[in-house]
Image (cartoon, rainbow, N blue to C red; front, side, top):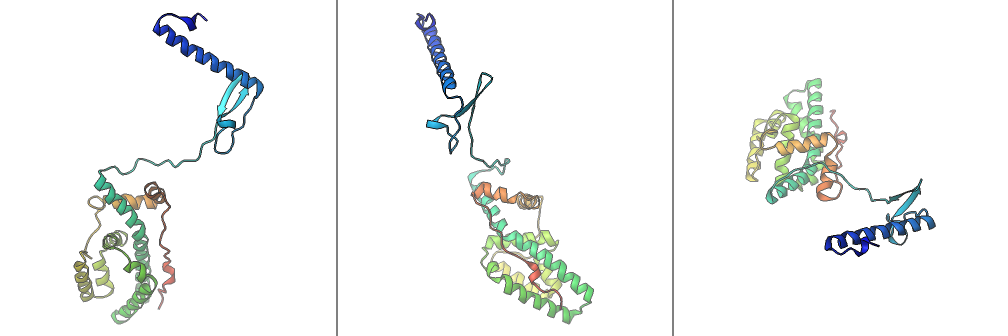
Length: 244
C-alpha cells in the first residue's frame, strides 16, 4: 500500500504501473487456477476473444495460431515510372517466353531433320513452308493478339534462346528476299528483326527474369506483384510434325 500512496509524481507513476501489473498477475493466477487450459477457437482467438494458454510446472504459456503468409526476397527497386515498366515487363515476359522456348525447340528439331535427311533447297523450302503452315494453324491467334511491346520482347528472347536474330532464322530457312520483306514489315510497326539480345546491357532485367524462370522462382515473383498465379500459355511443340 505504501507504493500506491507515494507523494511524488514519479513515485505515483511507478506505483500505478506496479499496482496494475500486480493486479494482472493476480487475475492471471486466479484464472489459471480455475480454468487451466483455454483452447483457441477458429481464427486463432481464444474463448471470448482471449488467447489460449497452457500452465506447465507453474509457468503460463500463451499460444495462438496465425494464417500462413508469403515471404518474398527483396525484389526490384526503382521510381514509380520504373516500377510500372518493370511490372509490364514481368507481365509480358510471362506471355511470350514460352513461345521463345517453343521456337528454340522447333529450330533444333527442324534443323536436325533437315541435316539427317539431307534435304536440298527445293525440298527444304517445301518442308519449311509446311512447318510454317502448321505453326500458324496452331498458334496464329495468340501470336496475332500480342501487343507491339510483347512482339519486340519475343524477338529479343528468340535471339537469346536460338543464338540467331529472327532475320537470320528467316534467311536460313527461307531466303534473303523473304527475310528482307519481313524486316520491312517489322519496321513499319517499330520492330527490328535484326535486334540482338544484350543480357549485360538493355536486356539485363529480362535476363534476371529468365534466371528466375530457370530456377522455378518466376511464379512466386509474379504472385508477389499481381497477387495471382500466372497463367502460362498452353504450348506443346510435339503437336507439330517434324518428319516429312
